Length: 195
Image (cartoon, rainbow, N blue to C red; front, side):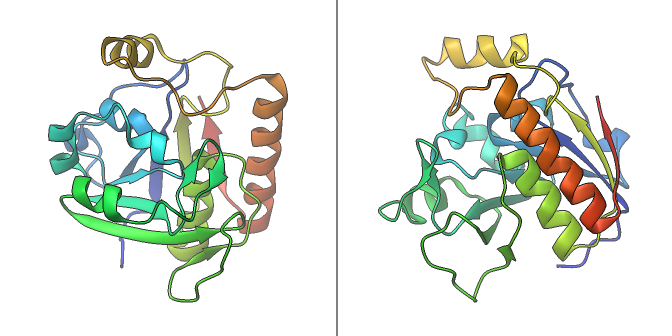
């Protein structure tokens, strides 16, 4: 996969998340993290380390996603789950499925790109993937590592669908994520802005 873009905007579910239209960012990679795909009309990528991260995305939204990126062993309740393979994900994926492995995967399969950074969340997974494999150096983050609270739109969407977020955040987890992002900034010489 060759991308000509020099910048990626990554949107998570946090308070600072914002709505983006691809037509306004033609030369930028737009990335949704889990259910935050709903903030982007036509996401270039959606990353989901956790199988629950796909819950709450309306079925008709999957047709708008250019690339769906998941680990070989998707997490369930924050742990890699060998019983969950691609069946559930493939049924949702309408376009390109990208499979990668992260440190928590029980078996490192050389067939897939391996993110050797100890990731804290799907947000830093996406940063590591783009920095390591696509040499993207410029990032802007919305709704990631900003506060403990979720964006009101996400809260309403998932409440309406009787869905729950796949993880809980607290001050320590936000601090750990910021530390992880700083390691990636230094390791790959990144230019990164957190909104």
